[in-house]
Amino acid sequence: MASLDRKPTLVMGARGNVGRFVLRRLLDGDLPVRASARRPEPGSFPDGVEVFAADLTDPESLRPAFEGAGQVFLYSDRESVGGVVQTACAAGVERLVLLSSGSVIHPGSAGNPITERLRRIEDAYAAAGDVRVVPIRPLVLATNALSWAYLLRATGSLPLYQPDALTAPIHEQDVAAVACAALTGAVTPAVSGLLTGPDRMSQRDQVAAIGRAVGAHMPLKELSRDAALEQFSQFMPSEDAEAVLRFLDDAAAGNSPRACTVRDVLGRPAIGFDRWAADHVDDFR
Image 1 (cartoon, rainbow, N blue to C red):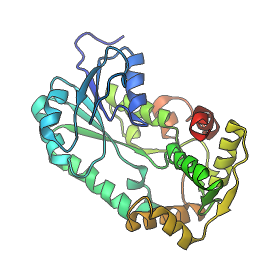
Image 2: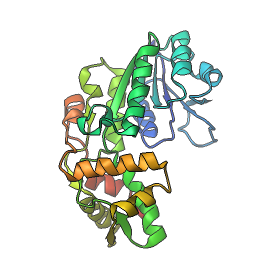
Image 3: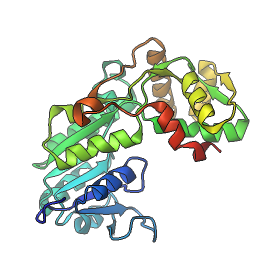
């Protein structure tokens, strides 16, 4: 039961893959909570939740959402740091829980342009003001596999680069659970540790797990590096596409780790990928 004098927690991006579970967990814990989205739509949030239209890049829109909040969950955005921290300090916010990336503390990702961009965001938040900033650092989000659903529908097969590269994808519900621990409890170094799932799995085995959950065969097509770079560059800048391929090359060399942060923070094992696949059956049908 929430204490009557506890300030509410603001969940920004509360319709996102992680934010919606942060919101749900706080509500299930009977904690005071409010939500925001850039363009809130009627019926998008649970009944009884106070909803704000707020954009990280627009400090004026943040003021009413931040006012009276004790802590805020938010996503990394390189354009917004100064305005967010200034507004948070003025509103008396005590803690910002920032969804960042495990690549920031993963040695194999050093120099990767996506990693360094996220590192600069973390550093900027840390240096920008008096409010406490707590980064949450998932290395490989299982939700990355949702992009495979589009490829399957578009091509009838799944073109993958380095299909046998091993990673330990983490369920978004575990990321949200660790974020909630950082929002509601005493902050320990563990909450900002490397977040992974319980097992390292190849992309090939992840596809097989999704196929078992859906009850369908999902044929693979192994891509050359040049073909993969062309494919990824359709959806992101070429520099970022190259960074993704470098990460997969490193994983193929055995350098993408499994960590115990979920167990250390939550006192239970991380959720496995088979469960993630079962939770997302409708996304692949």
